[in-house]
Image (tube, rainbow, N blue to C red; front, side, top):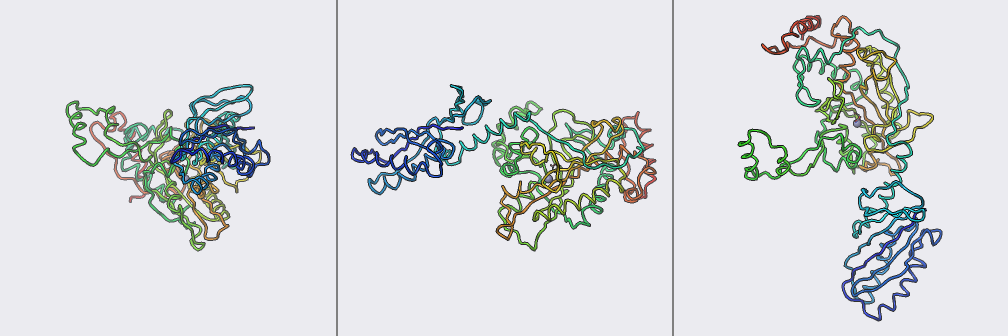
Length: 534
Ligand code: SER
Ligand code: ZN
């Protein structure tokens, strides 16, 4: 049982005259017996004014309340009731409202810390937890901060019960075993032969030969999986305003993984004179001073890649004839800060992906997902001939929004959720060990997780819209393929071999790639020359 207590200060436009004060007995009676009990089954559930005082132009009302008419709702009900009376009868206006030190009183002991926003202190008394909040202004009362705090407290307790991060993983399908044609680590080879060069944490420069392979992989995926299903290309922006991330959930779910972007402090070069002088004199980058010359971040760099798709349809009413909408984007990289575990092309900070996005009625969204799954299976199994498996996992959109869900005992893949695609990396070790598999993509039905907050509406009033998305991480698919099939095109399945033409020549310098790897580069080039010339 949750109870509330608070002291509301109504600041009025003038001093309250003596004779008005008498009227207050009746006003309070009416409030306590009628207004503050509306919607409550009992007095305990509703709100009650315990006492009040009048000091000059301040009306101070103390309120206790239950779960139905929470203290902040009571404050607003009182306002709505007294404002016209004061105005009409006594020509007194209401200037502002403040709720002083509202308290939330919860039965039992709870693991709440005073680090929660708006929380001033926590006390435990007689088996109850008392959460004392900071004073709230009228706009905070309306927001409603208290409801959200209670939600947050309950959510944290729930999360605690489930042990914090609950991620489930259940295999739903796998390919037959396939004898690998290779046992090496392709990232290692690509680095040695200089096709990729490490740029910065989790970032690489992809030279023309590897770019060629990446592009051919992308094209194969688009031709074989996307085009036949009617997906068409769009270009989504790659810096996402923070407000968009508030709606997708990323802002509270993945701030530890996002790279934020800032605008300069001004467009005026003179404002940067000090900075320029510093750089000139130091001849290094005074990184700790940069914060004085940039604004607080306004964006995060593309993270899920589908965020702009939901934004685009936000607040629009979609015509039935337009549905379903099937677009994909491959216009730029995504960024994900990975503190540890950065490795070759398998775990990157900057990675490239084809993001497949669709919007429609629930049935349409499920059907498209199912058709995509068929095509994905064909692509993985026949075109690339990979050893793969699929798993029903914690939905990515919940993980990204920092939310949890209980694991269901049975699964229904036609409900909202995520399927991960994984491939075995033989160089890491035997297929029986999970750590030797790599997630190469995923596909999801989000239900109304995004159509809700973005308010994407169907032409028909009662019909809802759902969305789905799927990420094809190009580097990872290529690494999975090269890990199982190697660099010799004679070991590549026919369809993909026919699509991949010979890569352009590799860059060589006296010092690049490292002279001790020149032989390896020659060997790889020789293998590549088996491919059709462009
Ligand atoms: N947007 C999805 C994700 O971030 C699919 O790419 O996982
Ligand atoms: Zn997505």
